[in-house]
Image 1 (cartoon, one colour):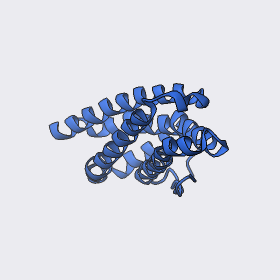
Image 2 (cartoon, rainbow, N blue to C red):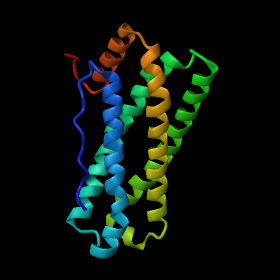
Image 3 (cartoon, helix red, strand yellow):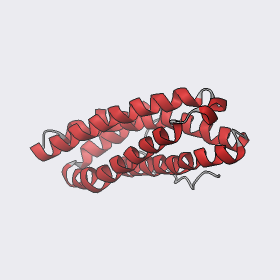
Image 4 (cartoon, rainbow, N blue to C red):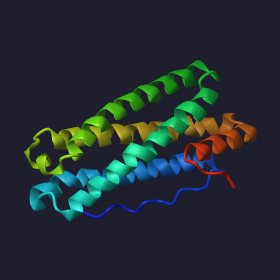
Amino acid sequence: MSDSLIPEIPDFNDPFGVLRACHERMLAQCDTLEKLPAHIAENGVDAEARSAISNAVKYFSRSAVHHHQDEEEDLFPLLQHQSLKLADMIFRLKQEHEQLSVLWESLATAFKKPGDLTENPGFPAQLQQFCDLYRAHIKFENEDVLAMAQHIISQRQLEEMGDAMARRRGLRRS
């Protein structure tokens, strides 16, 4: 059970590229996490399982939080007043962010005691629900929302968005 290939993140001069690369990293983490129940059933919570858990906890507790903030604080406000259709799409995405956060908190709590995962019969289904929702969320966001946003957001707004995203991570945009 090795981590999937994790794509490089573009720099903040390309905010849409950063958002898409973060989506790819989320999907790669989900690919790894989905292998976890079978791996644990076969090998127990060994070093490889602990490493996968640690990587997922780091990613979804920090990077994914920044990503959702990028969208909710920087991208969505630029889009939600463009049309009723986009406002509905943004509303849906915000609701999904809340659902993903609740699901993640539950998984993160379970991951604090990895040895107990073998005795948690609901863990595989909970993990699958989290990954399935992330996949559907990312597909909708990439194919519908980001595809539209590229035609709506001005170059100046993109630069401001990239600056805000970099600042959120304590970086300066180059």
